[in-house]
Image (tube, rainbow, N blue to C red; front, side, top):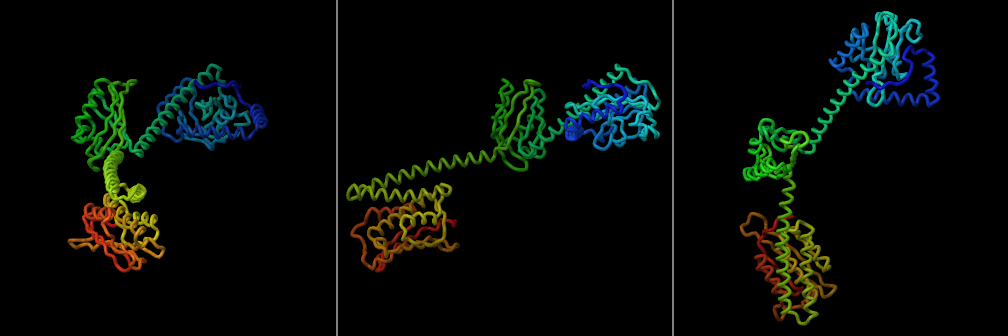
Length: 515
């Protein structure tokens, strides 16, 4: 039933309208009225009913009202900012009129029923074209069509071309009940439109989010889909995945048994369904999907409802992480083995405890330089330039040139130890003993195409003026360099003492690609 507001149920004359205007001015006047009108028009737009085709639900009511009250015309009139438009018009062919001509505008202004039994003596209507023209209105009774929030969208009104007595209070109350039926129909229409829009919005959101929803009926074995199904399962999903068995057939053969077992278990005990499996996507190849579902115990406990998402990237990242952890574990074992060997062999070469600590610290620094380079990249390969920057930071009078190469972890550690031994010897016995000394490192790789391409590196010390010659004995550092170059890198190392200083030449198979 429509909400009723107390007020005069008979003619609304000029004095009533004037009193309403005076009250509006006293309460804030135009601002209050403007806000109310904005709310009313916004609510009317919310119903999305203006200019829609005729509908039986409204037309039945206007016909019934016209028959019941014995009038030739009954209207469902909706009023916007400039016109009144008839959603249902029994006995009238005109679809709309200007708002300023409408009788219904007074129902909206007074927010209560309006009844006019003598239009010719009413100054508001006596010159109205709807009265003086072909429509020939002589009687009008209209009740508000009140929306869910109280805004009046228009009227349910009766029109007669002949003068007649006014409606009784019971008849007017019954007319308001019919207005309530009209608004109930309008609300059903509004709610249905909002539901459809919400469904379309959800489906668009599912498409954009890459999520597909599904419903599996355990009784019929049927499967229905919504959302980003084409992206996840294939463009043919509507015909190809309509049943359980057809859906299972698209799952990767190695995963089918596990999926069927999980589904049977979920059906048997009503537990949630949760699996991750691969599918053979007809357009995208093998993909990983994550599936979640549960039983709709409130509506139908034989229906399993759920979602599925593409987890291929997550699986790839997980596999990469596992590979990285295995590689890290392998590297740590190699590192510990290298440290253990250095500690053991340095012990035999050290002259005393201080010398032992110094040698160990220097070689551990070399290992740390290699690890810094690997940590700055991908843990598996390191840049030759990055390693040389680490060496240069520790030994400032070292200069270097050569192409940037990507060295695997074992080669990078070996080169770091070689450079450390050469630089440490240069500080103690060579060019880096004096401020005038300098070390230049140059390397290159043979051009591609040769069968035995080589990497060639030269370590050249200058500034010793021939004061430094070959050592009396082979030190552990020399053995460490030779082991690193020959055993770890498969190359050769040669040392020459020239008048300008030590020159070391290293030759290795050219296996490293440029960065």
